[in-house]
Image (cartoon, helix red, strand yellow):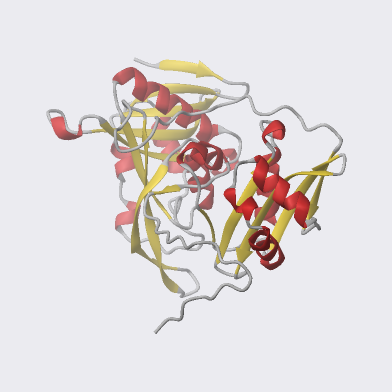
Length: 337
């Protein structure tokens, strides 16, 4: 049986393994798809993969041509312990990448899993694949594990290096006691366009009193320590501010080594200005200021994870944090033996 959904440029169907479009799609798909450019393939890479051996697929069609496919891999029948899981692979023909095909398949996948009673959807990908990680993160998939140096890559020009494997999953089942709330996928909609009286500035200036007022407006208790706010602002390596009619209504700032890691310290928007897309625009401008840095890191509250997921961030469960009492000017800092 085939189920269909139609979009402006293509249609989405659930198809069986015998669909005539699948062999043509697999033949047209680059054999090094999913690998870094220039990867030399092994003999086993040229054999049929798990992706090609599924029983069912979610396919995207332009007319009669299959341009994207997502393979569905259920748990072995009778395995009660894992029957709530569904594993998948996804790929799109190069000419159709960046046109919403992957997002259409993931939307249909989540819908199908809800209909068929799956609670957990999971996959594996490679750490180099920024486009895929951003796509999955935007749908609420979170990182559950990293396989360090799991894959060895040899390139056409003789280079060899190791890359990490990333395990990601999306929970759509009943709320888990170990985490607050439940994951929700947000598709479409979005904030209203920004009025013309908002102005953004990269590494713009700000007075201490307006910084303190902004921190206080969002309930950040650091507003009680103006010296800390002043020092943090002064030593930030990158910042973006947004003003409305001259008033500071939002900021984002971070610290960078300019090569491997950019740590986002703060994203603040006055409560009465929230819901207008200011936070997303601040984040995009702040991250753009770093160019092609290796990783961007932040700590956040559980309730804001969907917001950052839509910006391509992945939820990482393994984070360590040590807090210290605020230090004021003149306070003695304990010596370390």
